Length: 342
Image 1 (cartoon, rainbow, N blue to C red):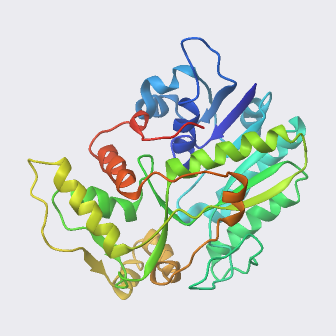
Image 2 (cartoon, rainbow, N blue to C red):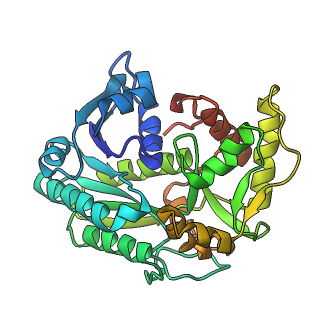
């Protein structure tokens, strides 16, 4: 029996992992080899988000910043999926504290940690896929925080699985960037994209694909019986221009909605100088400007190692992934995600 504890189930990555794990649980016979536990600050919020999907999940109410709550939740698990996230402006205080609590509890109970890495900590090199050996030389404050978090994990002497990915989208993901694309489109408004470089290719990840790969890797690594194995995999996803991605969103919105007139015009581009001005009043806008280099250039991960490990792994077709995300914005639930068997 493999028990996963998800910390951050109502976030994008945590919600996707939960939805994929839930699809493996046979609640009629109880025959699944997977059990799910979640540490949540608000059980009501989790119930409102996932409904009956939680019927086979053990909920523990508490805060990841409270060590006693974390310790109680970690006990008896095989993996902790650290899907915690905070607004950018709170990263420097809350993220390290939350991770240290999880690491301390996992050390006490000898439990492995699954950590969703991003590209912020990597040395910026453009127009060539970057392997897992690429150096961590961050050029931003947020990148340094992410590097420090991974250092905590490396020093923990625990089984750690990092799966690193670029920008993501999907039914469980909501943020100011995605809302301006999917949300605006469904309202008949023009999509809004940051920056003006729409024809440069960009790597994008569909969260259910990322979650499915993460679970497969975690199950394989747990079966290896190595209690102190630190491993990192890069996840590639799709490579497409933002203009083409935006066009597919518009095309599929037209198919989905018969009662909303979708704007025939292309997306509105928000220049970085304008966003920098907005950052004088909005801290999140200010933090976003710092990541401009990831929006304007081809910053891509090489997932050769992952595809060698998960031979035959296939992505959901991009158009299908966009449709599922649009449906979630119009009221669809995570249980309706297109998925492949784990």
